[in-house]
Image (cartoon, rainbow, N blue to C red; front, side, top):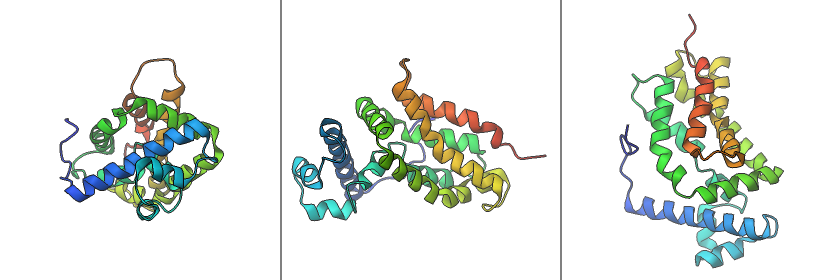
Length: 203
């Protein structure tokens, strides 16, 4: 399936905003890598991008919120894509389709993605922000996967599957520290395959 299939068209304003958010995030990552997360200020980030402080705060409440933007797999987008996939697809198929849609973004800047994973590994605060984001999306993901599991979103199985899918980004840590030349999308696909036994409806 081509990555562009079933992807809704993005408005010009939304596209510009997405690109600016991405530029802010990648600029922040460069500064974090050069001088450390704690020593980098919002003022330095906006100066590099040449926007106002007020413009920055329209997108991000704080410097820490840039970290969520740097998580290229996009947990919130993943929930949305799974929920919008055709109802006839099983969960494994829906995840593969979602991964195909996100492949271009994951492959766009491999060096930046590696830098982010290294930064995340070294900073407990940043890891905590991502874990909090994933936990906060657990119920939304459970609602998205429930119809494909034939269960209620509140069931333990749906909740476990939801948090497991949201945690599959851990595969990027293995990818960033590994010695092989594989791609991040392949690492995430491998993580999804590990989870597939959970997707089969009981009975």
